[in-house]
Length: 368
Image 1 (cartoon, rainbow, N blue to C red):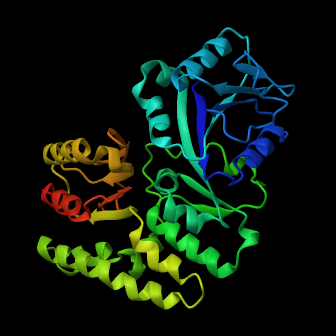
Image 2 (cartoon, rainbow, N blue to C red; image 1 turned 60 degrees about the vertical axis):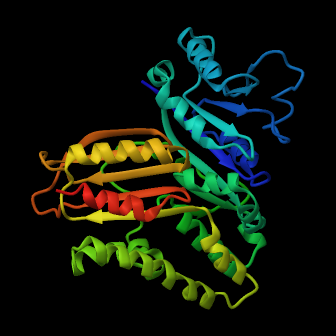
């Protein structure tokens, strides 16, 4: 059995440590290995992680294991897996806490690139904690914070009780544009049930594309992707729609901005982390698609945070599921399309300043 791994990321002070303490102390019968990626200002518990300790891995009384990385994540993961095989330490899963400004991308890639790691571990999901009180500022000022949102499979909003409902909704709206895949929950002082944290299967190649369907039909949310094919299947109109959609977003945001958080809505489009969706009822030509995706990933890989799709491919009666992080892309055959099921391509891309039109037109040209 592979050891499930969870990456916990989030802004400084967003409550990652509180959440971890809760997870570690909750009597759920699971033994957890926590890896702190670098020493942050806040360690899980100074009694546990003694800075002076030469020992990199410390066993806790409840069977959990804590370690701090001074070297490479690979080495630590390999080391932990070896000790576990030899029966020197016991744990059921791993949580990697990145420092407040780390980019979770390379951490996630470790699980795919490295054969030795891939033989022992299965990356489950990336969790991002967002501090409601300081989020607007942090998202405006720090690209790292925006990247963390783009990478997330699940977003937890902490300190929600410290801000008004209006500004919370503005924040949720903004986060949703950056990352429509990740469900969001408001959490209170790190009180999150263990079921909301583990086994979320964010990296599973499953046939469910987790995008809230309302997000796609909601006009502010580029809903035109949704209907351009139904009205007229011509590529060039699709292009006009996209243009039009981008512009017609603005007034609606300003309209909501009747409170002092108007700037949050307004800034919304200045965020460099954005998402967009491609949909089509025509099948893809597998060779063309492979060439196009290969080229795109080559050029834009570092700016592509997460992308995922359920594809309708010529030549197979099964769904093709693909996903990627940065330059690493994987695909798999999923279940067969159901008898009455409409065959449709759905892809979502989340990234930094990605040229939406190039992607959408390029994909359009890969259709049969």
